[in-house]
Each structure stands twice: as structure tokens, then as C-alpha cells.
Image (tube, rainbow, N blue to C red; front, side):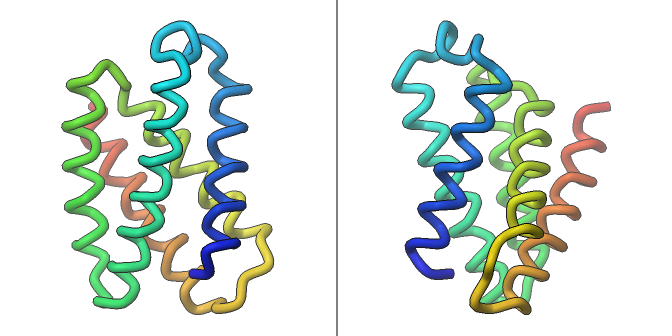
Amino acid sequence: MKKLEKDTLVHQVVEEIYVAYPELWERFGNNGRERTEEDNYHHLDHLSSAFEMESADFFLDYTKWLNNVLTSRGVGTGLIIDNYERIIRLLKNATWENDEERTAFINYLQEGLHTLHSLQR
């Protein structure tokens, strides 16, 4: 994934999240927004690694770990689900140099969503 593609995607996702959930400003302030950006870069980095390793399990292990960390900090699983859904939608609509990579990212995210939904029960 090219840096510009990654930067554009992260910016769009974070903007959308903070528009949809303005209470995040009150709860976490600017530091929370910065952490949301960092988290989204981590999501994409883990997706890239999973793609390179051809291992959905790598991304699913990350998803479980992420859920444990964020829920312990007061960020609910529902917000992670929302985040993954936004990435999927934006990936589907993005111009992408490597379509095989984009398809794999979407598949890994969908598997991650399945995992998150099972953890939410």
C-alpha cells in the first residue's frame, strides 16, 4: 500500500468517526483523535503484514488483541466494528494500485468483523 493511499484512507476514516461520534472529543480530546489516527495506521499495517504473509489469522489475532486493549480503555467493541466497516466501504470505493491487496484487506476486515461480533455477545 502506498503511503499516499494509506494517509488518505486514515484521514477519511478518522474524520468520519469524529463526525459520527462527536462525544469522542469530550471523552478523549485531541489526544484521543491522535490515538485514533495511530490505531488506523496500525490496522493498515497489520492488514499489509497479513497480506504479505498470506495469513488471515495474523490479522484476526491483532483484532482480538486490539479489542482487549481498547475495551480496557473505555472504547467499546461497537466502535471498532464501526471503524472496520468504514475502512471496508472506503476500500471498495478507492482507486487502488493493487486490486489483489485491496480484496485481501476487505476479506481480512470482514473476518475481523465476524470475530468482533462474536466477542460482543
